[in-house]
Length: 376
Image (cartoon, rainbow, N blue to C red; front, side, top):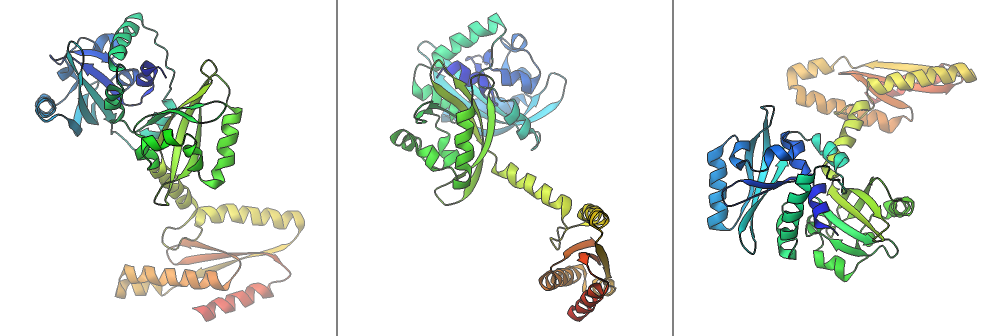
């Protein structure tokens, strides 16, 4: 696997500086993060891009005297003047004739930018600039001389890079960050090259298998699937994969999106449900009511809407407090849901709606109303 392609496909900004803090190499993610082209960045002192010069100097001092400087919060200066919060990791790279320093920057601007990062990551970025190609070639040759030098950079990024054989689907290469992603040590995947398939959640195995069968050479494609970690917990992974017919292998980059999935599912639920009672809300009522009216019109059946206004909730809130009032509403909701099969909706604070379909006459609605009064 070409190490230069790895550097250029990473979402994190990678910067290599010399002993005088002058930039010798940046990857494409640096330009996307900071707004500076490669030609503008190379040769400039790294201090130019930091809001707090003293803070960077202190981090470099920690690196030179303590051996590392990990997960330091910094503030960067974008080309348009914006301030960008980021996490910085510094690593020392001992070359044959000189000492270089590798800086990894992760943007902390907004949670939603994770989706953009995952959708724009590309493993096979082509260099269009001849000067950048020469500089990247020189630096990547130095950085790829030993596995230890590669791991020095790969340990600082969240994404896991991997390669699997097209025929056997066995692991050919996996970066050291695989342990954070799967909860299994790197050497386990080399000892059992098909371990990654065994860890896929059973319900997602057919989807993953079909994905690789249908993956053709060309643009990289994405897939989300679940895995089971050693503690039994389920985690969501997003993988961006491309097929290389020359090497007969799939090459990919994977990232944990469990938090993002939970966030998205919560937003989707709250769009149509009330957070207090977990009942459908008035948005769901509008859609359900339209469907009920259309069904009654098409097949000429009767329907009914039962509206409940719990008048004493305001008195409970005023005398006992809103926490007590909320618990009363939750108890009523649970009692109603247990007693009826119809759709129960919380319309507003103390108002509920019940939708009934396929009625022969109005007597059922009257009996249901009487039953609800009994429950109250």
